Amino acid sequence: MTVREMLRDGDFNVMDQEEQPDGTLKVTLSKHSDPKTYKMWVRDLYQESEVVMREEIT
Amino acid sequence: MSSGAPDYSGKKVDVILRAEWEVVGGKDKVFTGAAGSKAFGEYIRVSYTVPVGKTLYINTATAVIVASAAADGDLEQHCYLEVTAPDTATFHLRAGGNGGVVIPLTQPIKVTAGGLLTIDLVSYANHNVGLALSVRGYEI
Image: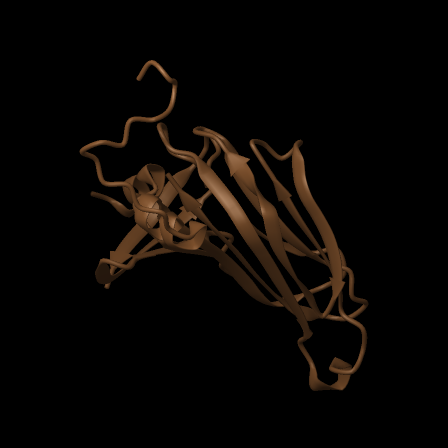
């Protein structure tokens, strides 16, 4: 499952959103049941022009 | 039952506090956002679309605004927090504060499936500030 799919499914407990200097939005998801942190950098979140630039799981 | 009363025979019924039920019956949700240096009128935004088949309830909103520079630390730091759903035209919460605000909601904000929750925190300080928001609730 991608980070974008996690967001769409509501499969998280905590979500942080932070604007980046390059204009992208960093979305960080985490779950109580999972020690991993799921991140994606996206443009135009929830708009038709939404584009996920990259994802990272740590 | 013919009397109209619930039939609890043979079934287990628990009475629990609402706060406990929110964890057991739903998935608790926390939405956060922050930025280091914003000028007058600038804002941070956190948004979330509630998935199909789910309902989101927001029960607490907090905001923090602090000066970016030490020299401005003693000045007033005015901010404006607003929560909109299901789109950016329907306001559910509008609040202002100096230095921040904490708002426990006795009646949760309900956002149904497909609704777009948007949380904005705007600076109305006359100097650059750091902004942070945290909105809590649960989804079932």
